[in-house]
Length: 336
Image 1: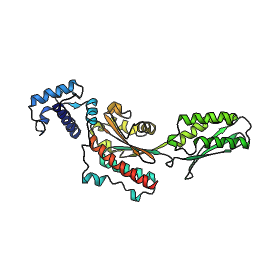
Image 2 (image 1 turned 45 degrees about the vertical axis):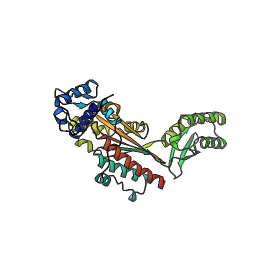
Image 3 (image 1 turned 90 degrees about the horizontal axis):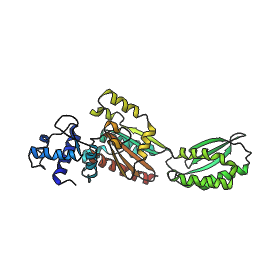
Image 4 (image 1 turned 90 degrees about the vertical axis):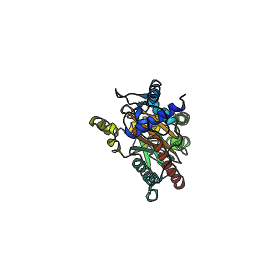
């Protein structure tokens, strides 16, 4: 446990580092109104914080910066400390009234967050937002079946599979009934391995000659469960000192094309709010970045991720994210 003075010094070092991006020395803290101690006392306390692994010295400079553990301690101690002011709120106003689709709403919210944070914003939403499908099976040739998943708004995903045995119209009808009995009526985000196992069991009991369709059906289910990725403020990070050299900028721009890894990281976030600092962040953690992920727990599951330097202003960013996500949730729940 840290005593109050150590907590104050740690918070002050981190706040100053967030603002300047430079190592913080004891002299920089002397004039803070909450500290009424000598420079020697501050140096001594900073040394203790360094021994505890909460501060570190990036080089021979006398200044210190927060370690990843120090930033984690700081984030965990935040208690709605940032209050959005009128200027913030004027930026955080998604243009929902002019949006005619869910995708446009998500993009509008993402643009607001990119403008507000000055960082890169990722957002992920189900490709098929209504989330419910019915299934149809039909012949697509002498030895080929077409298996289709049809959403309530008419969107279609399909797979084709070759069959080696004679299949009657009754077999096709039976397969269609099994597919709809197992999968139809369930939101795609709730279709997991248990329901897939149930499909295999029902197929074995009701139509074993069509076991060859199991892999194609699993592939089809994964297609309808897919998420779409949107990126806003993709050039924002290039203005940060951490990406000022050509090699760092190149790595970042290459990374933006890896949609699969970005989606995997976003969708792995647990709970309403997730903060992954430095190496906890599997995206660009080695480049001293962090990602703040916020889930919009509306009728349609959507997640936002803000990627920025590890020295980002977490309190401000979390407050802004919560504000925009609440607006989006209310809009979705009203209209969908």
